[in-house]
Length: 337
Image (cartoon, rainbow, N blue to C red; front, side, top):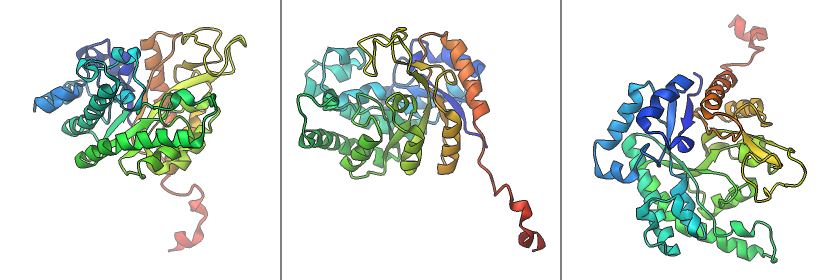
């Protein structure tokens, strides 16, 4: 069977779920990847109210929608980050608290651990999200940065995430890090290092999103094959690069998304430069059977139009793997038997 086509709701958190669910169905989706923001999914309500998760799932079912994963990207960002005033805008009040950086990190870690229990109550086996990073600001290594300095950053990540992953193990849920600039893992090399930092914990894997790899120059198809057993979820998001007026480079030039000067920008799925055909082949080769979840971002396009065409693009792109060799018809020995 073809994979379900779902919509990540993070960019739609301004819409109540009661309004978004029928819209998603009309746009062509099979389900939603619920973000823990807006009224889409509330971790603490799921733990405090035995009927909350059931009601959220019933709301989706009323519109013919499934849920295979939930997202807690925003809280996850604060687990390892160097906290500043920007985090207050993305965190629940009970996680931000008094804003003391270490307190924020610890409360974020507890909330992410709780997300595993909330996901289990909803009946889903994957939480997608971020980790944050204490060393992202050193990605360009000046002042001169030693491997020992970076090692301490990965050690900090491992120390903070091991207890979180034990909660995920307890509840039988996987954590899928979206490999992404600003996270502890932002390319293939740092992804391997992150796995080492958590002792190859079986609950730690990746939410594969080619858009964040492609414009960096990372081989995003090879990433799938290298980490085949760690691809726990897939985001479908497109990007183009090599654009702009030559005044802004890969680091973004402190410009906003959609600025015509930019070297790269996110595009509606199928409108950018990502080779989704090769991705579809690789997903079949590695046996990935989970959803294709559209994370729709395109500053130049109406989002309902874009999300609708993205669903149609993914449905046309996806195909079931072969059940046998295409030339098996010529095997006379098997025919004779």
